[in-house]
Image (cartoon, rainbow, N blue to C red; front, side, top):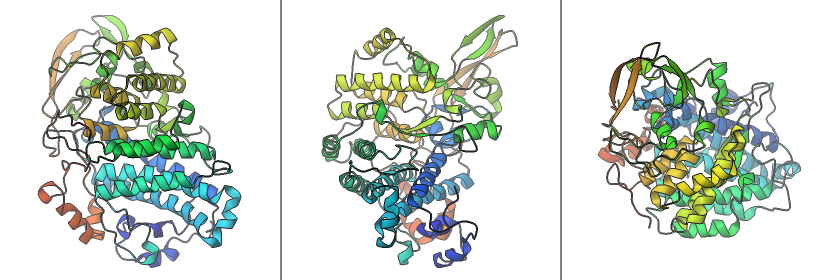
Length: 544
């Protein structure tokens, strides 16, 4: 959908990449005589949802950043981003794109708030419900932004038309406080007797009750992020539970793509439309799902020997030869392998381009938040409750089974749940949540930084190996790889993404002040988030 001509006015000038025009000049600059200015709110919401999901779940922001940082995926050709060498142009672009998404949802809010437009747009759904749904999505996207870069513009970004051209960077603590307040306000205004949208809402089809559950569930996500730093985190979750959270897989917040036209998934587009065969599953994640310990680095597995049924849902297999015999198996790419060794290292790993997994289908339904995640949050909230934990596992397997079309017998599901329930603690809940969050690299990366789990992921300086075999599968050599980042991360996984260079030029004063508050006063990849209080690589802080 074509965005309205004034959309950029809701962005601070630094995000526009414009250095010679003021925001007041943007009316004429962005005028398109072929497209009307007064786009109805339902069409704006549809476009805003797609813009947000397209730009978070694509092969750049997710594929070459967050899914790599969470070590679900690895690049099988050019592995520099796996090793934290980030392309500055990509960083600039996505900082802009995600704030443009914020602006899109704000426009929906404005149309339903302004007396001059609210009455007209009430034809597309109750004004209060449209406002609430847009606020919930605005918070969802703002959370992605702040958990990627840290302290970022927040409180002033809606004031651009009032003359605030260069927005200050708010502290992440204040941003979280604001987001929780926004969600509370949003769910409290929802009128469940009226639709949120009569059309245009791809995520929930205008169901106000489901939007309320999503808002409360998202509030639980933000609260659990604060569990190490804010003693009010349980109060936030208690409020959300009382108001109503996800109750089953029917409530999952997901954006369903279509296979017609160009409205297909960006994972599909980046692979088959662009003709790129760049990604595969990591050895670390495969080993977690296969129940295999990391013997090389001396790491145990919480459920050693237990095969996870989601392995066959999350990836396809590879066929290769071992000593002349053709075999089919599930192997992963050793994360952080240098590009110079990538061809050899990927030999026995899945080729997703030729053997398509579920998430590369054009009409894949991308989950923004699952019911299983809510149950894992509830388990942690309830002192790592066994019943909540087990319900989370069942919900996860059933959800991904439905998405992939791979059925799991009830007896096999029962056996798996029993096998991973012998010791339900912080590690068990964190690792099971990590498994469920596959494809949601932004949230998984946050949880790794918050909890220090899974320990089975590789950290800088740790070793991996891969086998080199000839065409008949005869073993020629075993190569050792040491995970060596290309940017300074102080021997841990990447803690944040640097502020984009465009901001240093176009919003220099506020950028400089924000950088001064980072560790060492430099724009770096190792300054921890407000909610990340780990004191060492394998530290697992307790909740307040």
